[in-house]
Picture 1: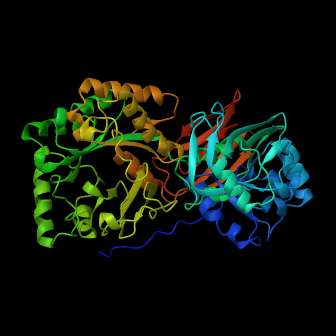
Picture 2 (picture 1 turned 90 degrees about the vertical axis):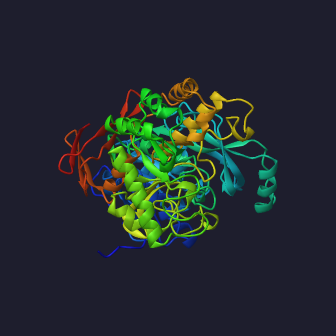
Picture 3 (picture 1 turned 180 degrees about the vertical axis):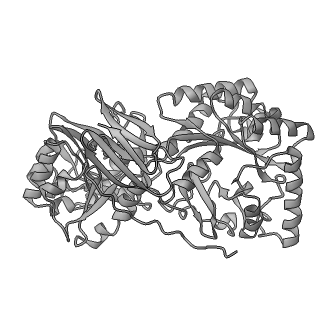
Amino acid sequence: MEVKKGKVEHIVHSSKGNAVLLVVVNSMGPYWHYSIVEETVIYALMHFGMPFRILDLAKERITADTLKNCAAVILAQNLVGGDLSLEESSMIVEAVKEPGIGFVSFDNDIRINRAPLIEMFGFERINPHPYATDTIRISKNGHYITEMQSEGEFHTFDRMLTCISAEIWGEDTIPLAEGILGREQLIRTRHVTPYSAFEPINHPLLFITGHGRGRAVQFTINPRVWRKGYYGHARGIDDLFWRSIIWAVKKPFVANMIPPFISMSMEDCSGRLDFKYVDVCNRYGLKPMPSLFTRLVPQRLMPVIASQIEGNKAEYSTHALDYHNLLFGAYGRGPYTKEEYDGIFEQEDIFWNKIGHRPSPVNRPHLGEWYTESLPYLKERGRIFFSPALQPGVLKLDQNYNEGSWPYDLPTCCYDHLPDDNDFYVFAGGLERGMEDFFTGTTPILRESETLDIGKAATNCSMHMTHGLRSGFFGIARFHEQKFTVVSLDQWDEILKNVMIKISGWEKKPAMLSEIAWYLKNREGTYIKETDFSEKRLNVMLEGDTSGLSVSVFRNEEGHVTREFLKPEENSLEVGC
């Protein structure tokens, strides 16, 4: 059978109806502003499953009828606010007031906006000079947009970005985040904008306001913050992106988002504590995936593995034969010969026949190295998923962790077909390379800590789980089973108890990794085709395979944004308003 190879194209679909986002761009604007819209805004909207259509000011102008047929206006390109006429700006502000559509501007240059957009936020004394910052600080976390963040939390970019400073804002306008303007930032600011003088303080860069029946959001940091070379998506502030839209948009609003799955996996497993750590995970609703060194698992523990699989308590995979002998190729050397692969997979089949069950379809290669020559053996056995999403055929030292998969070309938070064979699917929802094990720095192993630091381990674990949720992927906590040489079952219970307390206020759906994998693969190519308000009902039509999907329905209820997960029937959904 012919193998399909290459990057799979992800098509930008336009949605119809009056309950979609209107994404405003200008293809005749400066090239380096318009050219980044896809990677900064469009791909993110596709990832979050939000229905939208694009309005290009170079081809079409905003009218009152246009605004009646959308749930929110998104200014997706820098300087596009200045491209709007006074009349268009006034119409947007009136539509926010009544009938209450949302407004979100990622266009940070409020200096050139028309008066209605400026007055909606009550901005005064807008500094004519931009300032530079490489740090964003969350100033409030009691709001829907920032409640996934910790108050006072900092995020540092890879390079400086310009921001516009509004020094006075309206009584009903609230700043939620701010840019740091300290000594280093002032030095850069004075270099890029000579003759300007800024007070070394924190300047707000994310504003929200209510206007009539509607809501509005204004970012005053350059939208290049969403590019990989600056900070990029899926590194810690994507919740500000998607929650700004969800908070502002006219509701009910429907999005085909990934449900907030959480899961856990252990690597280098041979059966420490007789796999009883799985039972502790189950106590807190988690169904983990231990990845095995198959040669090191004692015969007496094989029934334990079988029982946990049969009881739907855990799924198991092959990590490697042992620490030095990989399943997928020779570490640091390259692929095995055909004879070597034949022998290794025969050994692996014997192991799983003894267990009496097939391993998980999710592969987690030991030492982060694997080779395409192993793919036919895996496909024959139905093991078509890889997580994390590494680069097959490339030695570990040569792998580029700035290159990856859809939607943001990352290996850390992604889901996509494997370019080497499109029948395989890769997915990940974790932190950057080198931060995979949440026990790092918390145990006496390698003298990373003098004693076991239960509090720090719990904090790290909760951070791992919530990182993917912030970015709209899934939460995954990973560690190595060797840690159970210094962590007792009682201590493990204490750690997980603390983790669950820390994430108690988060939306979460515990799931096995294979369940997450199949959900992501089945969601591929499915989008909201049309969504309309009609007679106090929101009618939604989806395109693609919706079997097994749960669509997010957002509402405003008693001042709070709520979410309900509904399953479409025959690609359609009716939601009461």
